[in-house]
Length: 295
Image (cartoon, rainbow, N blue to C red):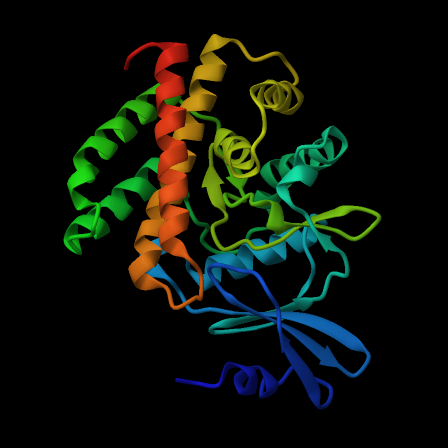
């Protein structure tokens, strides 16, 4: 197994001898802070993860496009398995930050810019992140590996099919698709959006639902988010599609963690994360049926 810090130290992008420190956080990649003379950089180390649909060529293309539209730091070097970016000095958000209206409005502005402007700057092939196909792929992996929850898959995937039908026809945009609070950084003047591993074309409803489910937005806040994003009050049809997508987002998070339990070497309690998200999915599904009728 390679020494990751020595690997980073040997990259040809540095001006001199570098100091490297492990950067906390991250449940997909290994992250490092690098001091090169008077400059700081952020290095992300991670190979392709086919089981999660993470392909580093897509992440690189999305990261460069995000910089071009002013959403993310500049990529200064890339090679197989590593991205080096300018370091952002700032504070990583937590869910309570996201819940504040002033911050939420800024976040929606970032999401809108991502959805509207990034396709013009994507070079090469682009990822398609359709959550229901993601769920089908995860379910196949879990079945093939006789996962500990394999017996629950038929029921869960039947629900997923119902949710896909409830979402219906979609608008296609370029989404971030992983809107955890920790992927927003406040530098004191503005917000930045980082970590583009899962970026790709998708429905805007997924980013909005993913933002809400990851950060504990209230029902009132969710209606406000839909009204601000679409510039109109959501009708029952729009709310039904949105909440179906929210259920799918939670199920995807649970499946992602369930697969990661046996496929990731990152030091993280995936089992607890799986249980938390599957419980939240069950609650959201029950609420969806109550609000919009049995499917």
